[in-house]
Image 1 (cartoon, one colour):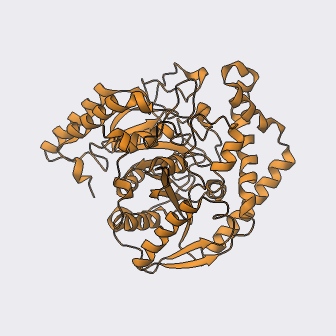
Image 2: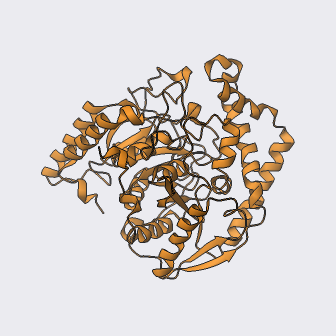
Image 3: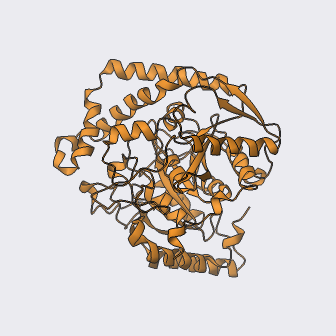
Length: 452
């Protein structure tokens, strides 16, 4: 299966994206670093290959953006942090190598939260990313620049990284599709971490078909990543249109629809209706202890990030005060707290394993609230607890999740629905997402502010 829309016109697509970057990046600050010369060179190579009847791979000529915690050889990679403001890696991250091998065109590096640990992409070091639907709002974080770039037509697709929701949340708040893969499916080698046991790289795009193709290009075992896992996927790209007939869609009756904006609940349930119309059926279920998942995941993430940045924490002048206060929370967590969180993780995984015996997919809101204001000074810990309370549950279980645009709030801000599946069932998510997008056009909407 090839990316037919790009074949023979890669340079045109590349230039379209670069033109949009030139028009909109001053407003959105989606990109930190832009590499137009290298991108055009890659696009010309793709077009020359097509003219010879050659295909470079799954991503032949597709213009992509990279979150700036992903190493790129010879191109600055800041990780949104003062210590790495001028850091230029010697080697590409494994995912970058795989993108290049698949024929992608790489446009540059996108804005992110400081130290990859912020739900608003509000960054005083590399600048704050802004939401294409409302410049006064956040596009989400920490992969906010990647999501904003896709939403604004600055890239066909992008990579982000997701610990507790940093692909899924920006996708929801920016009106694009975002995948958090099964943990271990995609190599994290060459990527600045938050929590090794929870981090994963994930693709974003407007269309589920493009997300699926990017995932197919970057997944795979990497012996250089100790958290990478062996798994042989079928050739699922040929099965993307198989539909949802007979699939069981689980609707939780506890926690996941509590304290959610009413218009968000209505939009998410419209996804259920659309899938039922195509032959799926709904199953109500209860997930015991779901309300505890955010706290227990936080114990693990805060401990891991404090360990990862232990030396940096000794020089607090190398980060902003809010980030220092957030990171140091991990130093106060005890070994007993950590052990209890690991025990809860094992029990939660068992809860979901049992649930997936009775359902195929789980449907919830991606987040209970619309995009946050960039002028909001709520502390990082509280903002995360409010925005990411539903995404932490999937993180803790290491299951894949796909956020789909499914409507808008009264303020004109995108709404995301989160479909989750059992381990290694990304292909099922793609089938459901494509079925939904075949009868809706939310993913094709363009922010009014960008039409001027």
